[in-house]
Image (cartoon, rainbow, N blue to C red):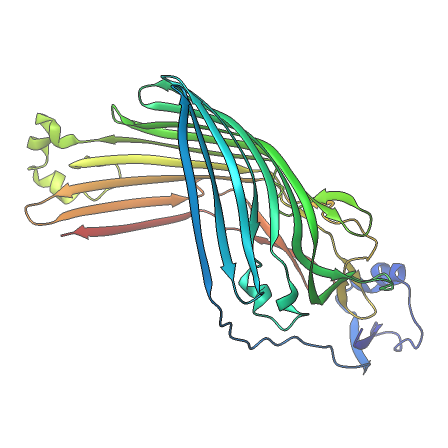
Length: 386
């Protein structure tokens, strides 16, 4: 706390004693006549200023070998080596095994390996702690899947994966923080670990007979280890279910006799820019996206110092935002001329004007507001191709 505030109403003097949170919320919080007075300052909050320029060399290489012990079995083995001289450590990625069993329309595959990753640049280019002491973190991963051609132009892929993470870069944990936040943002360490597992389905139809599309669905669980209790908690990107559906229809009206006569009509030329008017090549497509609610950790407001905080013993990411739901629609018209092509497009984002939350904004007066993502947004434009 850096500043002490006093609360009073016009009909009463400024109190000279500490009030409880219950009294604050019942008497002062929702009263527009509440007077907030800054009594005195205890100190100035510390700040972090980073003005560093990284100068390092990064090198790497990879090698993989594939062979067929039998006709329908392919085995791929390989490894990768990366070197980043800033931490003074190299990243060794040992050989991973990737066998593939395939027949005419079906393939089965399995892969496993340990994958290393150097710390991100914003951790290395920092004055927080000792960046040169940070190690490369890694993940042990195993994936099994199949690939099947439903038709000549439609492919189905199904995969199941499992990952274990360790030595992840996190903030240092504080001991005895008097109920306040338990993370030391002034020091980063290799103290994080976690796991994720799930299933992914992908169906893709290539463009044929005027149609194309794809369906992608994944269900996963992504959890980190809480170092305070050694129990798992949901990571912020633990969305659960994610669905993406893309589809489109494309037709070349120039292949039809009626259109070649139609385009010479003066009315057709005058209104050809309208979204649903025929064109030399016309395409309509859509994209649908669904994501489960993103986890977050609720904050508590301290009315005495007018600040938001997270209890040091409070479990992380116990609440979730509402799911994300959005449908986009796009219309595209292409016109061919002798020396130039013209493309006119109409893009309608979030057609149903769905309220999609991003995150809460915590205000200094103790209230919180939702920061929403884009609502319906129509976009139009023209592209000239020479």
